[in-house]
Length: 155
Image (cartoon, rainbow, N blue to C red; front, side, top):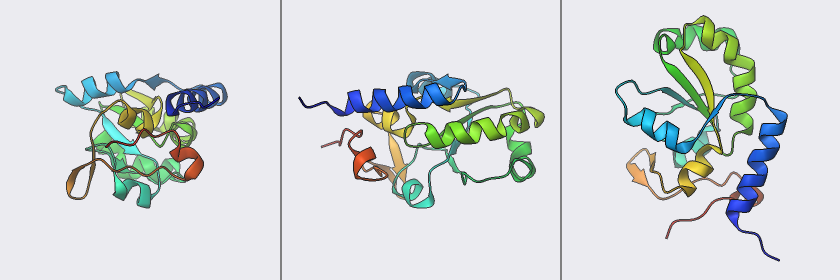
């Protein structure tokens, strides 16, 4: 029996959510926020190679090992009064970082701190746009061969 990428992605998301109890938002919720008058501060927690291949427009690359004090020092003025959303491929790395930085996000007066449920894979699989340094792209980094099976390649 062959399972599709949706099943694999849903399974991986469930495993992440069982391990990390963070506040999540859906791709629909993020899309609405990005289109609104007060877009969130969006952080891509993947590595630089993944980010450069494609990311969600307006996302800032944030190293996963960013220390709380370094985060606060660098992003306090941007985060104040805004919603913060972290994402990675499916949500594991961003959930880990959110657990570590959530109190510091709130200390710099962020309105909320959440994780994108399913990460950029769910965003991409939902037909939402991704960009690279040149603009819109249909390419996405699958992280590795196994994780890449969760991506529905665009034709």
